[in-house]
Length: 291
Ligand code: ATP
Image (cartoon, rainbow, N blue to C red; front, side, top):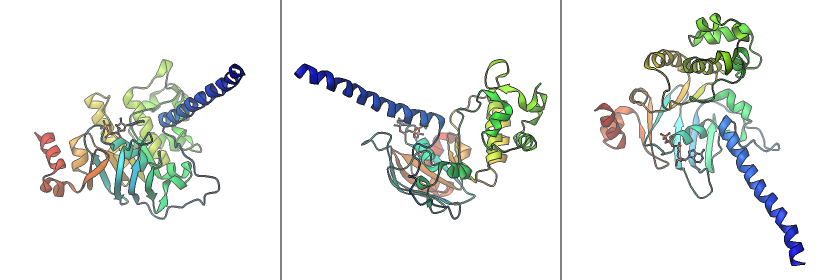
């Protein structure tokens, strides 16, 4: 009898373990494609943002239970301003960026956009207001038109060309043999890294979110292409609220507000001059960047 019950119990155990792995796999996939992992419950009253300020109030977050990556994070990003996140590698800057873009929900505390809780807004709505910009996943297999229309499925060709022109990509786009029908993303006509990033920027122009979370990461581009792209990016950023994960000096220096992230906490918050005068971690960072 013991053997039989073991035989019966064992497969259930296996299924449960599979189920665990399946859940982990689903979560990882969500991270990979940058979509939200949690949708609001259907019964939830939909929250509508009133205004554009992004706020974090006493936010805690961890990727695994019991391991907090962010702790007691409180900050406000006023519309049209630029916030730079600086700090050592692994401090939690990118994680905070993803939370502010509504990709993850906070474990504790509140993340709001115009007073409405991000976690209670439908993903579509969040995406129409806030976009995360990084150097990953820029071009998918499909035509240039398909790639651009990911941002706005109803955009007509004229709008697509305008968006390409806005990011200095019209000339190479017009030179493609099949124009917007050209298959990009793989095979014969893979775009250069710089072109792929211009496609990503053109998508932003089409989606037109008022707030951008910019994760510069390390550039894969040669200096000339990087400078060219930076000009296009500067134009796209104009007039929007920007949260920049700063890896370079001038990004932080030019920001209205700088948040120093260390060990998952915000340890300093203020404008450049104030933080330099305060003589703390940012001042030390500034000196080392300078020197
Ligand atoms: P960097 O400047 O090197 O990009 P960062 O300040 O942006 O670092 P995060 O990338 O936010 O830091 O990482 C904070 C902590 O969370 C690190 O310990 C990191 O290992 C962990 N972490 C980051 N992303 C994930 C993830 N997807 N799953 C699990 N842990 C993660």
